Amino acid sequence: MITHETDVCIVGAGPAGMVCGLLLAELGIRVIVIEGHSDFEREYRGEVLMPRFLQTMRQVKFFDFILAYPHLKLQGFELYVKSRRVAEIGIREISKEAPFILWMAQPVMLNAFYEKAKKSPGFQLLFGTSMIDLVYDGERVNGIRASSQGEPVEIRAKITVGADGRSSVVRKKGGFELEYQDHDFDIIWFTIPKPPSYDNKVRAFFSDKHNYLALPKYPRHVQCGIIVETGAYAAYRSQGIESLKTELLSAHPMLREFAEGLKDFSPFNVLAAKAERVKAWARDGLVLIGDAAHTCSPAGAVGVSVAVATAVVAADVIADALEAKDFSKNILGRVQALREKEVKEIQYIQSRVSRIISARGRFEKAAAFATLILLAKTRIFSNIQRRLMVSRGPLPVRRWRG
Image (cartoon, rainbow, N blue to C red):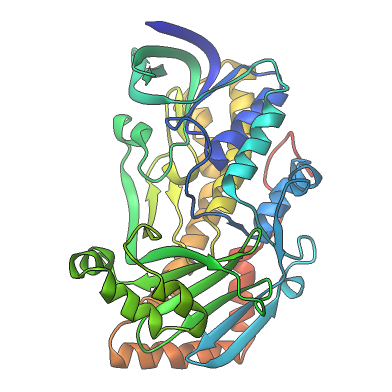
């Protein structure tokens, strides 16, 4: 068995895990991050980064660094009800500090953080390493047992961080309970070439059938999402590709060429649009961050932004804990104390938006359309966007004050 000893072991090298690990490593703290995949090159869905993400990057002095990598700047948002545009919002109108939405492929972003983290001698990232169980010293979590390339590995750590996403093994093995769950719809994602006339705006299309999202993607593509009832993708698969092809052919002209070329379901990925929140995010020696602690709905596309904000707060709290040599639930629980209020507010807004997005049936759809048009005629719609997309102020941390 291979044994490692470190200050902090982070399970999961997604945005939250990498940002937390990078910040800790730059403070001179020994960090080992484990990642089950062999590299970062895989399909992701959280690649739209709202102004609140850019605000966080400014606060930790990563703003210029991250913008040096390939990206798109998305300048606005449009909402269509049937063929009628009912709302258009420029990002500058709601965020002067970060006046655009950033599209950056997650492999690009994660590799950028990795390259920066590798400059710190105390940082290690172990690819192809999957957690099996937690290790305990009495009641306190004291690290993890894992498998790396088929070989057993044990990582002893003063503090373990669960950053392994919405299907968190750390959360399961640590016996954490969910306090909140919401699952109103799923999204079927696929990518098409960007039409010549398509500009860099996020668009939502509401129709009598299904509702759609369209997001420009670097370098010359559009990521599209069909909002469907829970479990609908399985029904499409059971009926064969022609059922989904027929749906897309009638949806929007820009999808026609893609739909006509469909042979099977390989271009599609489905995201269960779950929102969850853990009741208590910490125990002695262990804290959950990101989607492991609080999964956001896709409504508003703020999941990565919220997860990274929690990672920054967690890095500050963990550094305090190591300085104090106190690894108790009491001190690690400060992450939740500092972040839960905003997380709850975002999830509440998302739940209201989700009811409109997932409306089904003739009368529900009619009510949803009427609500959208009414909101679009007032400042309420832009206020909702601002509350989702923009942070009200800097994160409550001691080391990165902005």
